Image (tube, rainbow, N blue to C red; front, top):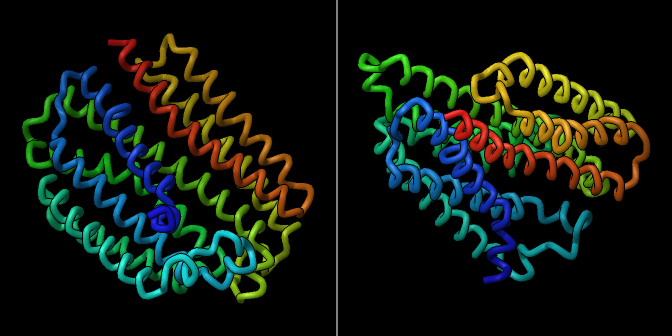
Length: 323
C-alpha cells in the first residue's frame, strides 16, 4: 500500500483536490454569497469532478514513473519503484483502472453540469498525459508547457463547470448573476494563469536538476540543448516577467474591486508570500549550476505555488468582510 501511495504521489493528488475545493468554496462561494446567488453545479456533481481529477492525476503519475524509469535510475535511484517494489505489469494495470474510474467520473460530472460533451475533455487529458510521458517530455519546452498547462487547467475546470451549470438559464440572468459569475470566473482564471506560469518555471528548474539523467537518456530539455548557465537566464527572465504580471493584475484590476477597497492584508500577503520569494528565484537563479541550488529553487517555486493557492483563503475573508 505504501509503494502504491508513493507511485501515485498521493500528496500531489491531494493538492489537486484541495485546489478544486479552494476554488469552489473560497472563491466562488463567497462571491456568490455577496451577490445572493446559489451554486449552479450540485455538490454531488462537484465530488465526481474532484474524483475524476484525482484518478486521472494519479494515473498520469503512474505512467510517468513507468516511462521515466531509466532516467530516474540516474537522477534519483533510491526513489525508483517501478520494476522493484511494483512489477511493471501491475503498474500498467493500475494505470488502466485509474484512468477508467477517472473517465467515468468525468462523464458523470459533465452530465450533471449540463454539458455531456465536456466528458471528452477528460479523455483528451488522459491521452495527453500518456503522450507526454511517452514522447512530449523528451521534446524541448513542449513537455514543460504541457505539464504547466495541465496544472493550470485544474482551477479552470472548476470555474467552467459552474458556468455550464448556469448556461441554460442565461436569458434569465439578473445583473447580480452576471457580476457573480464574471468575477468568480475571472478570479479563477487568474489562479489558473498563476499556476501555469509558476509550474512552467518549476519544470525548467527541475530540468536543470535532472540534467545528468536527461543527458544520458536523450531527453532534449532546455539545459541539455543550451546549457545550464543560459537556462539560468531564462528562469530569471520568466520569474521577473511573472512578478510584473502579478503586480499589474493586482494593482490594475483586483485591488479596484469593491472587496479590496479597505483590505491591506491581501497586498501584504501578495508582496511577502509570493512576490518576494519570486524575486529570490529571479535573482539567485542567475548564478551557479549545482544540483543543490536547483533543488532549493524547485522547493521555493513549489512554496510559491502553495502560498498562491492559500491566497484563496485571504480572498474569501476579504469578500465576506465586505458583505
